[in-house]
Structure formats: structure tokens, C-alpha cells
Image (cartoon, rainbow over all chains, first blue to last red; front, side, top):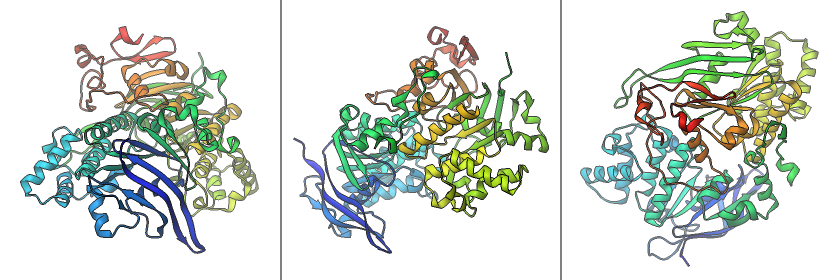
Length: 286
Length: 320
């Protein structure tokens, strides 16, 4: 059996509201092993993004972890509970232990600085390096994420790159510290399907090379079934189902999972126009 | 044969793109190039392609939100691109647009009742009482209660806001709606409601729809025919059911392969970037697994390989 990279147990989080605390995550428990891809799926408000933010301890200021633990095992060291780690330990772990990429790379990149300056900053956060070494390392990272002519691209500004290229740059920054766990929150949602397929292939290659655990947050069940080993389905802040990705379609047990699968157009493609039937909706199905 | 509701002929819309500091030389053009297709009365046509394919440009040009460089748009036989202000106002009663992000297209300071009634006011349709009744029936049609009239857009969910946008588009009784990614920003469970609504409108009101989307399964599910675009050009036009069974153009096949699906796998594939600068020949050839030397020389014409199926590819051995 592989070792868990992260083991989340009983994670409960709440938002402060005028009428006291409102729970947004309830008793969330799961683990991700070395080299494993876990897809976390759900609709908006399900808590899938909050879970990934909680692991990074990047919850919005009005939210807090009420209970539970997030045991992270980095390279060789003993497990540290991220739910209770100090800000200093967290800074070390963000990037070097856990990397993260988001849906909209443009908002994660500074439009006023070149790609080279931003990757360079990430590189220097990890190791003390001379300018020449930093540049060399940044170039190598860009090459690793499949960017052609990396030496020239270092001088580009974010707006000069396509959406797919920007996501590659973000991935380069996320893997700069050789993280044991990569969290990807809807990383391909803003991309078209062909670029999406390229980014997914890149993530798979990087993962195979480094044995990273990957937490892939997505609303797309079909995508989750293709890329993940296991799928976690979230609804209203709780995990309602966990199962092998390859059998998700056939063996989903929870009514919500089954309803989500049932209302996908791909499941109801008409043989011809006379066979068209309305899609079932969640309220009818549950 | 009767004239289709909408006929787009050799439509070209170009934008000038400024060169970047270290980027491509200036004067590069993107948009739509020589696009031709039709939308019949009561027909739902899907326009698919990746970002930069020009599908939104085509929609915006038809809606007269973008200026065409050349070509023709005929609506009910009339030359849309030549319309003056009065003809354009009449046209806007018959052709309405719905966009991806309902939040940005609804005025947050207006109540929903005012938002939906606005086009009626602009076009001088009915008196106050007629309009109030029309708004109530439109809300019912899109599945929202009458209490929505007095509320503000922010008080509604994304799916409800999209339905408010559709109600507003329906207010003037259009014959054609151009819907640009109307469900992409919505949750799966809400998408189903909006898709069902669009289909029902065709069935009950005979509404035609140009459905612009990058989501292949949704297009195959909802549409009668599919128009596939790549880098501004039409690659293939096919009945949706045939397209779903067997896309013909090499780009269509790539699109179908890359769309996530249950039981699918990530296939290893050599990656070649799209090249928007190809001046001659086929724009897809840099990425095409079936390209031959002639593809860099001969621009492929969109030709019928079957009566209802058009493909722009010189590899006739592959696409017929």
C-alpha cells in the first residue's frame, strides 16, 4: 500500500455570520496517496473549493476550521497537522510541500511583471540562487511544462500568452518546489477542450515523474472519471460518496450522485431529432 | 426550396491585432473568415469551436454588434449588413441575443420587471398594463414566479438570472435567438433546466436558435445541425445526430476525441500549437494528423460530401 500524502479527518469549517457561525464543511474525511489522483466533484457551494483552500490554510478571513485534522506527510519528514500548523510552517509548506493552481491563471499572475520575474521569484523563495542560476532554473521549469522557446518566453508578460500557456506557467510555478501534493482547482475550466486535454496530459506526465499526489477539483463528472483514480462527490459541505473513478457511472450509489449523472446531456443524446426528450432535472430526480 | 430564416454567406469579420512588445508582428487578423451557413425557421443550429475559433465573432456580427469586413447576412431575404437605423430597430425585434454571463448583462439597479419590460418600452409595444401582463407571462414561461417582478438580479441564482435574460430576449417575440454560451457558467443541474427551456421555446413558439458553445455533448443533444469552426473558418456542417456518430473533418474528430466522456482515456499525443499565421492552405494543417503537402498550398473549400453534410478538407479519401 502507498503512503498517504495527506490525510484529512473530520474536517469541519464554518463562516462567521451575523447570526452566529454557519457550517460550510461538515466532517470531511479522505486521504490522497503518493502518486494518486483524487477528483473532488460537486456543484457551486458544495464545499469542494473550500476543502482545497482549507488544506492550504487559505480560507477567507471570515471562515475558520472548527474541528478535524489535515495530516500532511512531506518528503520523508513526519506528518504535520496543517489545521494547527504555525504561519511559519505553513509558508514553508505552501509551494515546497503543497503546490496549487487555479481556474483563472490571469488572476494568479501579476500583469505588471514578466513571466521570468515571477517564476524567478518563486525559484528564489525556495533556494538562494544567483541571477544566472535563477534564470536557468526558470527556463528549465518552462521547458518542463512544455513551453517552446522558454528563454524567449521569460521576457513575455502574462497578457501575451494564451490561456493554456498561462496555465502552464502557473503549473511551472506550482511545481518549482517539487511539492508532494498538487491541488488543482478547476484548472482547465476556462480552457477549450483541446487545450484542456493538453494540460491534463501535462499534469499526468509531471505526476508520473515526481509521484505527486493530485487533488483535482472539478464540476465535470466525465472529466473526473477520465483522469482520477478515485472520485469524491460533495454536496452541501459533506462528502456524499467516494468511489473508484472507473466505475463511477455504473456504481454510483448516492441519490445525489446518480441525479448529477442523470441530468448530463451526454447521457441522453437522441438517436435522431424525433427521439429528443427533455433532460431530467435534479429536483425531479431527488 | 424556401429561403431559410438566416443565411450567412462568405462572412468575414477581421480585427486588427496590435503587435506585442516581443510578440507577433502587428496587423495579424483574427475573427471570422469566409463563413457560410444557414439557420432554418424553428431550427436549432450549434456553432462549436475552441476559443479563437471565431464562433462568438460570427454571432456578434449577425446581431450587428460587430462590423463585418465583407460577405452577407440575409435575414428573411433582407440584407442585414445594409440596414439603416430604422431597419435595424425592426431587425432587433426579430433577432435577440443572450450571453454567457447573465450577471453582466442585467442592470443591477433595475428590478426584474423593468429589465424584462425594457425592450417592450424601447419598441413601443403595448401600454403599461399590457406590458405588466406580458412580463408576468414571460416569467411563467421561463419558470419564475410573479414575485420576481419586484426583485433585483442579485437576489437570484445564476440559473435564474440566465432565465431572466432569456425572458427579456423573448419579450419582443423574436424569430431567432443568438445564444452565446448560455449555460457554460451554470451548474450541471441548472444547465438542464435552461437547455430544456430553449428546446421548449422552439417546440411551442417555433423559435430558431443559434446556439454558440464549446460543449460538444450539449450541442449534440440540443441542436438539429452543427457548424464546426476553427481559427475563423468553417470546417464542417452536419446534422447533429450524424456528427455525434461520425465526425468527418480531422479537426471535428480531434474535438470529439478531446471532449471528456465517461469511459474515455487521456490519449498520449504529440502536441503542436495552433498557428494563426498560416496564410495559405488549410488553417488546421499544423495540428492535423492527416495533413499532406498539398494542404499547405490548397485552401480547402467547404463542399458537400453528402447532400446535408459539408466538409472543408482536401483529403476526400478521408472525409467522404
